[in-house]
Length: 571
Image (cartoon, rainbow, N blue to C red):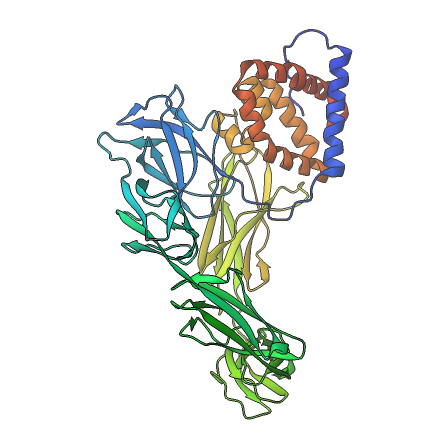
C-alpha cells in the first residue's frame, strides 16, 4: 500500500505549468518507447566515483587544494577541496579507468596514504590523508638538443622539468639539404618510434638527455625488374634521405606476377629483403632499390582431415613467383592438434612441424597440406553459483566456484536482475588461470527488493552458466547521502532540492519503481537518464537561482502530476 504523504507547495497550479508538465511527461515516454538507443548486454564502462574528506595530520586541508587521481600511475581526473575539507561532493569526482586497475591520489602533489581498485559504475566513499613532511613528486631535468642540420621544435631545445611518467611529445624539423635520422637518449628511454620525426617517450625517474640527429640527404631511386612485373614504391615519396634514416618501401606486383625480393646497387640494408613491405637503412650515398618480380604460380592449401582445421596462405595472394618466400599457418579445430606439413613437390619448410612457417615457392603450381591429429577431448570448465551473503538494505555479496579444466585462462562474471526487469545486467569479466572461487559486492540496490543472480564462465567463445539464485534486501529506514550516491549517482531532483530525503523525491522514486521499471521502454529510459544526468545535476547544484527555477518550473509540476494521477498508475 502506498504511504500517505503531504507535500507543501504554493497553492494553485497555472494552466501553463500543468500543460508544460504534461508535455514533458509525454516527451519522456515517447523517448523511452520510440527513439531510445538499444544497448548491448554489456554497456560501456562508467567512471568510478569517489568522495570523502581530505586531512593533513587529522586536520582538514585548505579549501581549493588540488586532488588528482591516477590509474596505474597515469593521471585521469582532478578536483579541488571545498570549504568543509571534502572532495567529490560538488562536483562529483568521476575517474575513468579499467577494471582491476589501481587508483592512487595526490593531495597538493603529495601522494595520499589510501588507494582503491577501479570498478565500473562504483560510487565509493574514500577519506584521504597525508602527513606533515610528506614529499611531493620529484621533477627531473629533460635536456633536448640536436645535431647540425635541424632543430627540435616541440617542446624546443634547452632544459625542461617533467614528473616521472609524463608522456613528452617530440617534433624534429630538418633544414634544407638535410634529413632527420633518429632520436637517441642518455640514459636509454623507449620512444614511440625512434626513427620518426614526430614521436613521444615517457619521462623516467631520472634526468635524461634527448638528441635529434640529422644528416645530409642522398637520392633514392626505385626500380622494378622486369618493368612489366610491378611497381617499387618509396612510401614517404621524399626521393632523398639522410644517411642512417629508416626508409619505408613497398612492392606491388602486376597481374600474373609475384614479388620475389629486394636488392640495391649500393650498401643499403633491408629489414626483410623478402617482404613486400619493409624498410631499408639509407647509406651515405645515392642508391637505387630494385623490386624483383617473376611469373606467378598457383598455390593451393589443403587440410588432412578436412575437418581438422584451417590452412591459411597468410598473404592470401594465391599465386607466387618462383623464389618468393611464402608464409603459411595452420589453425587446428577443437578436438584436433597440428601435426606437420607436406607438399606435392620437393619443398623445404622453415619448420615442418611448426604451425606457422615459411617455404620457398617453386617454378610450378604447388599444393601444401597441413596434417592434423585428433586430440583427446579436453576437460570442460564448470561454474557453480553459490548463495549470497552479507545482505543489507542496499548491498549484497554474491559468490561462485569454478574449475578451468584444460582451458586457461578463463573469464568469470555475474549476471543480475530483479524478477520484473526485462534484461540482466552484468559485472565485468575477470580473468582466472586456476580453479577457485570469485566474489562480487553488489552496491546501489533497492531496499526490500528481490534480486536474481547467476555465475557465468567464458572460455574460447563459449559461455556457460550456473544456476539462478536469489536474495531479498533488508528494509531501509532512511535514505542517507551515501545511499543516494550509491543508487542514483547524481539525481537532478536531488540537486534541485539540495537533499536526497525530500518528500518530492520519494514520489518520483515510487513512480519509477511502480511504473517505469515494470516495462522495457521505461527501464531503458531510466538507464539512459542515470547515464546522462550527472553533468546536468552538477550544473544545477552549483547555482541557487538555477536550482530554484528547476525546482519550481520542472520538478514540482511533475511531482504534482504524478500524485494527481496516483490512483490510476498505482492500480
